[in-house]
Length: 263
Length: 283
Image 1 (cartoon, rainbow over the protein chains, first blue to last red):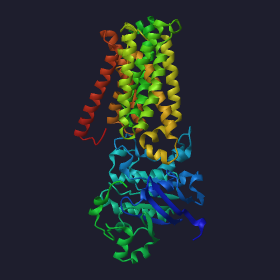
Image 2: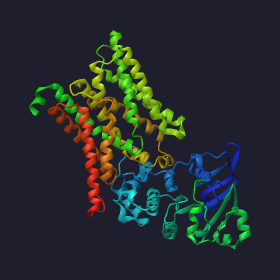
Image 3: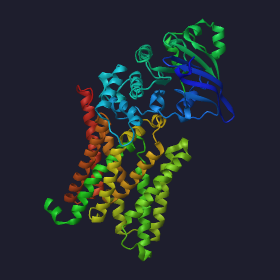
Image 4: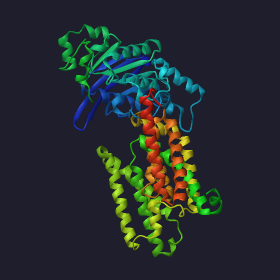
């Protein structure tokens, strides 16, 4: 694989909190245009890996390159969009419209002491359109359903034109019947706008027909490859790489909530 | 009353100061309330009291402090208190709300000691507790005006950043906003506005102007900007209405202002309820 074509390149990365190793010797390259499903049970180090890629933590061993540049020296943060688990950091009673929330995604890119101009307003509208929420522009964010709110947060990430979009368990708190259309929207963003997507989830089954690549993490990177290869693995191999609670190709959405929670 | 305002300077001072505070306190209040820091204003106002008591004590014992406006010492204490709150919030990461009662009781404790050293209450101190129209001087008015202009400029320039900090601190951090310095700037503005506005509403009630108009507008507004404008409107109505009523009915101005703000809150709650019962989806 050509290095210039990779959006994220992680080599020999290890990380530990106090005495416990969370990540060991991770090597992972995400090619431009990929839709990667990063799966692993709770406590497998997924969130730590994300924080490292986003520059919120510094690697202790090994290194991370973003768009070919060392993560520490990477300055164009707006190229990376991030959507966290909604429940983490958002007060649902907050009096802000969808427009205001999405526009806040331009804060860093615009810079201090600058105001939203016409062209930024158009951008905000476009971002809201691309997640199919243009009818809700002037509604308060707290009045929307969980799935709709999550779409708005994706629009907030999209508004700064990211080349890479990272989503951490975005369907936690999203109505089971809306999860599928949510994934369909992600697939469109990937195929039509060419945005590289990393979707972190504990549930492999629901995403295998959408993602192009799968990476299985549990302290070590147990599997990384195209989805078709991943689907060839048998159940025993799968349990081996994923850990004990494997729900492979399980499309029964009611099981989702058994595995939610922080990691 | 209009003719009285033209006639008496103290009335002019009180009304002008009140008009400014009616706008500036709810403006900062919106950010305070949505960040769930509503009690911070209470804590800081009590620290300010300690500063004012200290200033009064010093002016009694040292020629150097005679004639110095106690509000300046109050501001210094308030800013110091706000920095302590920040420090405590990082020390007690998992009990962030603990910082507020610590600072609040520390402020009262210190204030009571200074008051007793200064041989108890006098009318001057009393006017700081509950606010007094006649106590507002020209100098107070200029202080309030300067602080308010500074605060408004900072809020306009840093509006995007302050919005993001309030809405989603984690995301602000992740996108590379200087969250710590921003918060620092914000809390110093709060400390200054609290110290400046006590002359009108008094220490015990100053936080109400930062929270009650916001509590009312948050019920019925759509969007953050509208919340800000409605809060300022409700704040202004409370202050002007309260001062006028207190003038005619000879009531304590601070108490009258706060009760008007409570009344507005009740009206918005009732009207929201009515409009959701009779047809309207939302106001």
